[in-house]
Image (cartoon, rainbow, N blue to C red; front, top):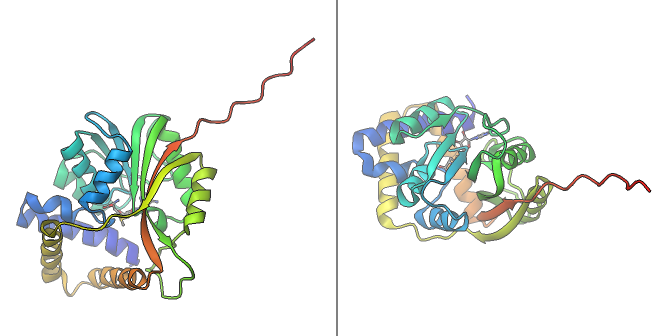
Length: 260
Ligand SMILES: C[S@@+](CC[C@H](N)C(=O)[O-])C[C@H]1O[C@@H](n2cnc3c(N)ncnc32)[C@H](O)[C@@H]1O
């Protein structure tokens, strides 16, 4: 079993089960698994100009907490895309939102068919970041916004990374966005200050999952992933970065030579 499947599929499914036992008030905090907090989501929503009716595609949506938050607070119409089957089923069950079971590098939507895209905590776990960003660029309407939450590397990384994760530096991320057709408008470090009521609910759900699945190998693997993250953050070797970018217009083809 891979650590990513344990973390993103098995534990995601158990998390939805735990929310169903505890109550809907627990759903959004427990279902934000890219470490988004309300301040992060608000920054991304305001930067991307989300409003009632915005078609928001969430690529690598996981359990759907961020998209559900945007629907509740901003009235957007989310579409979730998630390749892990149990996570996608759990998101549909928890929030009743439409979920595409697909890879972010092959989005089953038409060119220019969404107003905005979020992709939170996903880039560092995909083998080909450029393929995923190019595909997002394809489905985003001209002038549409991309909101990213990315774990970026700072300096030389000496501690072991969580399995299946590779962190771009700030410069690599900027180069990657430019090469895949995006212009970065604004970027900041992720705001802290998660309200205690949010943390308490997420922790209560995690404790419920642990109490039922303590003996499961998937939980041990997922815990090892988060311990490695915690050590890298504590050592200052990685940080969360928020980015607001827009698609650059495709370059015009050269004009045919003028005939005399
Ligand atoms: C850290 S979780 C973040 C989930 C969600 N965005 C959030 O913030 O709660 C990363 C997610 O990316 C998904 N993922 C991994 N590889 C992917 C790919 N190739 N395309 C789209 N999503 C992918 C995982 O299944 C997982 O749900």
